[in-house]
Length: 535
Image (cartoon, rainbow, N blue to C red; front, top):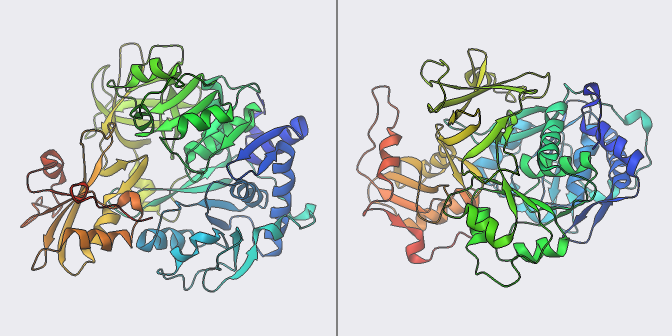
């Protein structure tokens, strides 16, 4: 395990140290056949940093990436950080207002773009942005309007200029990652270098990673789980990894087997989807020893371990505050138990959400946290100071999640307090979905909530309650409208037409009643007509 002193807790120091120590040892292998040694990642990112300097990118500028899992993604991230810039990866399924908000908030100097995703920019307003170049990954695509195209391969041909390279400090912002808004647009989390480093260090220690392990990574790299917990964890532990294009429940065990993986992560409904696949005689024919999964349900948790011969471990955290707690992989799986808090790094309380008074063991309240180490925590929300102040109250960061401590001091996650929907491993802002719905000419008003249904693995499906402006819109046509303007995962599954939406005295919609109502006899389900959201 790489053991750098605290003053060197940056991804750039980690990459340089492992390049010196491990050199040409294989590090990352990708689904398309590309591969990076520890030395490759260091050398190629030096070239990218040099080219970014020639394009006018300086410390503090944003390099935005709309790109899928690839070697280019990771080389671009490290190259941006070696220039002192802030790498800003965004969800590859974003479109319409969702995409425009994040691009405008980030106001990047350069955009790294998978060529086949270029059409996502066609329907948004990018005027007035400061981006000068679009770095195109792949053999197709076109630059964002108003920018000059530059093939990613050109970045790798640049001779290194040592004067262009910047060595960041642990407190310098290395990433902006967008997390869904709860009562407003999504927020860009400012992530110091030490915060990014800590994600990987915590996971590597909790999983006991070593050079003899091999990680299977099938989550998108624009999320902290894959990028920071898994890739950075492997970097620090010297663990080789295979990076898949995307998760597929039907091919998961085959890919794990082919990769020779010993450790992997699952999030949301992923483990349940795997478990629901038809059993085969080869379910234990693999080298997997350990899988981190959040959440685990009692209906399938122990049965999954028995069927596949693998141990689960759990944790609790979020983009803003890192992973606060891990369970012990040696313990029996306890669904919902995140384990013990990493007390060297964090102080965690469960508090009354109305008074912020700490609660006793087994009492359910809001999980609140603050860091013990400098720069190992979010530095706030980019260009949203009011949201930063709102999240920090009485000197504690309020997660908006309900939890409890048991008598043994273990943290348990209970539910979400925030008005945020969790579906297929994605956090969905009900506000942003409502903005798309409300723009439809046949919709006067809408309220979007998450509802629990069978087979969702403890997660939620999106339900839209709409007040029509005249005749009620055809639900299929309404979903077609949504599909063109929002990510696939955010398109509602359920639609219910209502005469009015009940509000509080201050004019806020009473969403709790809508959640409790769930799926009613009046609710239309897109699955009932075989509606499939197009890619």
